[in-house]
Length: 171
Image 1 (tube, helix red, strand yellow):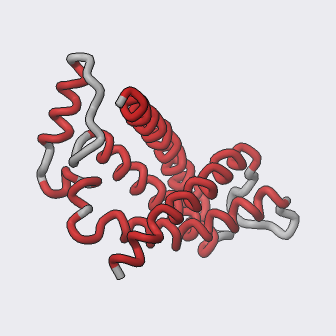
Image 2: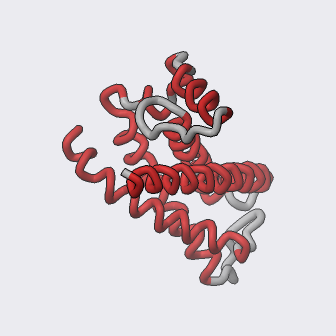
């Protein structure tokens, strides 16, 4: 199973990136509140469909990113390992760019991004499952909050990747 997940990891990342880009871009035009009505437009239907397809992708990608002890890289605080994040934060205070290796700040941002995506996908799927009731209204609010957290951590992730690319170019 491990070699298969390793081979699929890059493709899953690309699929999730494309799906998430669509979901973020389409979200201002989504008009769903309590339920997906019969009059729902194509943006609403596509947002719900792509969002629902994102859930299994993020679950498999999460598995790929956490297998064989890799979880300690993306979620170092779960193992009580704060030293890498602290090192990167102290370095940033001195004007240094965080390293991309180890369980540091950049990896922790990736872990938070993955968790935000998971919560967003789960709450969206639950909204679809429980639509029509009062629970859907609460799930919608949680879904929007999780999506906003996802957007913020995505921005931090893109910044971190950009800084890493600068390091590679300077070589």
